[in-house]
Length: 156
Image (cartoon, rainbow, N blue to C red; front, side, top):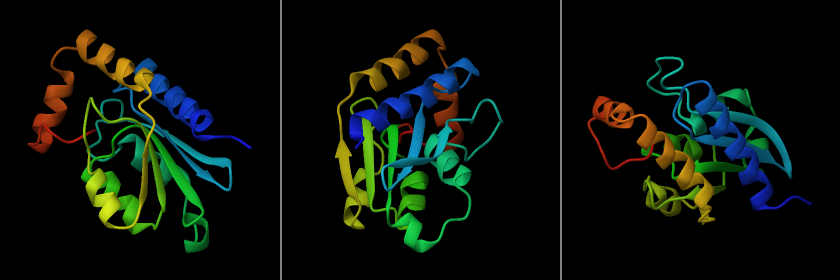
């Protein structure tokens, strides 16, 4: 049986894939019954998108699942999910979200918790280091993304 650290490692691989593509290094995987059913990574820059955060990408890539499938899922994400991504988790009744790290960026974890979603934070500093290295090597990129939504406190 795989554990949370195994699946977080897979989400980190997605974050690294985004970085390789020239994007923001945030990754996610959607797991059902101990099996990865979908992967995603931040594609804001690569696709000039306003919604393709890692979590949204992973949920989209899973295709149209039934309610009975979603309620068996856990979403693994390298950084704390923003309100949009948290809303999608709530909308699709995904009962559990595992976050690699949430000190770099604090998303809408309270929104998740208040809606009955179990939130687990692993404090995996690899997630933090990957993002901070990107921010240091790409001054202004993250700030421009935040300026597009007019909020500098939310993740992704």
